[in-house]
Length: 355
View 1 (spheres, rainbow, N blue to C red):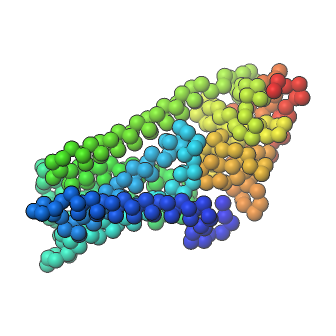
View 2 (view 1 turned 180 degrees about the vertical axis):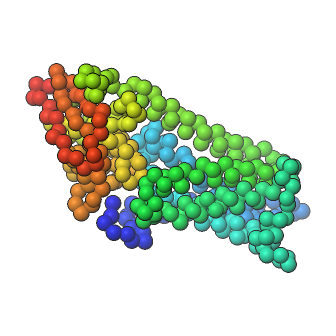
View 3 (view 1 turned 90 degrees about the horizontal axis):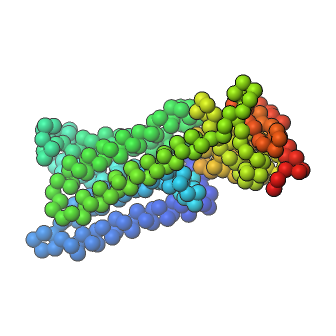
């Protein structure tokens, strides 16, 4: 969290994250060049320019696969959350490598004619009816434009000024970019592959991304269906369980009848409830911890007081809160959200409650 906008706020954690990511990308491309030189020799030798084109292209698509699996992996296992904190840095790096790939391709294949290189790229093939001759450059260019929009709006300045909803919708276009890149590679580079290795790797990547998202989505649906039952009071309260069923300084998440997820936290000897949606990027607050007395989002560390849903000064973000109570040793939460920043008296756990 920050009070004002700065270009980039690099902490030690972010420097380590970015250093590892950049090193991995550099190692990938260097290994690709070395292995390519060793594999294609003699009459089958490939020029350094083409090898570099292939190295940057393969690195970009590999990084995009990594980006797309981080989210579901973090939902399935909290140990992957550190990878999620600075995923936007990884996205910007992916765009820059993809941009380098596009520049190399355009310059090498279309930079020496009488036409403008970009015009030459787009007009080199217009046979949309043939898979063999399909202009695979077009889906690649569209994917690059989407990656550019995402990289250009990756800073919190755009998140705040576009609104969280608009920003999230824009960045969900990463899945469209992924589909376009799969089409770009499948209709382009893989058309000339005779060995099964590259197509097999691409198929394995698509299968992995799809499977992890299905598993994570199914887990969320099962969790919501298993939410607490409705109790009395005109169906406006739901049963959460015994107080100590909620982990200390953690939460249990339940789903109200309207689909709104509520995070119920146990801190010290009290129970509080807030919306499960972080005001930053919609992160799942119920999967976070209470740190220094504040609910801390597991995605990017934004914090809120459990008692009123307000971020600690000097920050001004607010989230919705919910009324809670303990009746007959059971925690109950109201399904009616209170306006963001509304103070709610926490429910105090009786001393005789089962530990």
